[in-house]
Image (cartoon, rainbow over all chains, first blue to last red; front, side, top):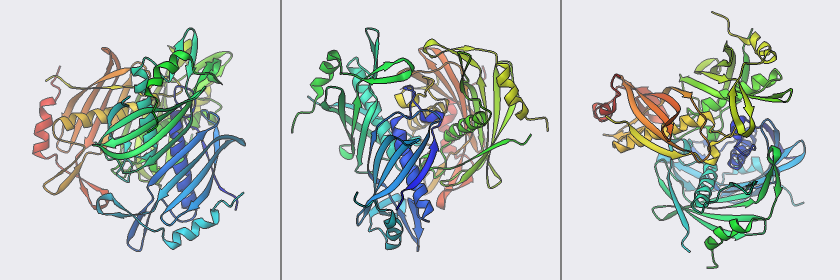
Length: 141
Length: 141
Length: 141
Length: 141
């Protein structure tokens, strides 16, 4: 399946004094792309269903920075599902500018039930969630 | 050598609607700890010396999130040097709250000469820079 | 003239633990809307022309917060030019969600020539800049 | 009464490509100073007492930017209480770098009871809250 693609333009406040996007912002961009991907499937990083509330806090995040991104650059971000475990999902993100690789990252989120007072409890990914993201699972290349 | 330690209190704007520090902010915290470490040695992520300007843009960053950090928590961040290559340095960061592990990350920065117009050119880490951070190199455990 | 309108969806990282957009982010949103407005006119907050570099650093910013904005809300932001002085411009911003007022802000930027080393010198707004934004000047109501 | 003073060092990620602190960050700095002020009095922007939960969402914020603040600058921020109304408080903030004025801002927060689902209801500032901040009320000059 072709990856899910979002595009965003680098804003002035995304830059730092080295005249490039501050590296921590790539993680904001990844999360936003993940949310847009999930929204397109009727899902989300926080979902309510049948009286239960689920969240997907991040358990790890990583990014390789290949080339600087500059103010007003339009970045295309391809989102793929790298791995679906029993209780966690790993998403992959490819950042490109006019086809040229800019950065490449991964985020792993754990499925949790949200209890009172924002206490989190690890939980198996519900079937209805899993089956909607499965088609985007990156196949071996 | 004992690691270099900085502490910071979680600010309101560091949190997100899941009532915890937003994961991208751990990368800001790591960079800030790295800068404080370098400053303590008379160095920096941007240094001028003998008419030349050096920078250390990030080439990769990774973080594992172990437990949520909350508003007003005081985080202790231990900084170690994990690896010094010819042209790059890897720093390790251990986040703890009252001794309890919160997160663990790594950032690799490449040494670059800053040319006109913020063009960057990979460059060998100068000897005077290397010899000041070498004592903090994490030894095999 | 009808105001210039941009829309943006509230991202997860825009929120804070009070489950609403953190107030400082409205200032990021205003700047981004201003940049998009200027871009639509072939201008920018940093422009080069005839070998000179101009910038528009902010001299004041203000915002009234009327109702909370939440994760995934789509905010419409109307941009108007409130006042064009000899050396400064004031922009007005109206935030609405599905027509309902959310916030209302103003930003005043000073025209500056950017000299070596990012030194700034107050400068009269060039005629070619002024004449492109003048049509958006809010008329007395 | 002498104002309450906090100091903070400008971090790399606070800067933008104009090599200065991005203007929206001054609002983060103000909030953080306000929180530190309240913490010093045993109060907070979110407090629980006698089974009730109070919050102080911002109703307006304003800042005048006098001189750029740069990476690694140490900013002293003086916090004063400008006005205590029945249901709102206005704080004033003076930013200085080695005595030199950098910026000057104000934030007005409304006292609210936090109901289920983060619904907010305007509420009279409790007496025990008011009497602790009153001594910092700026007197006519």
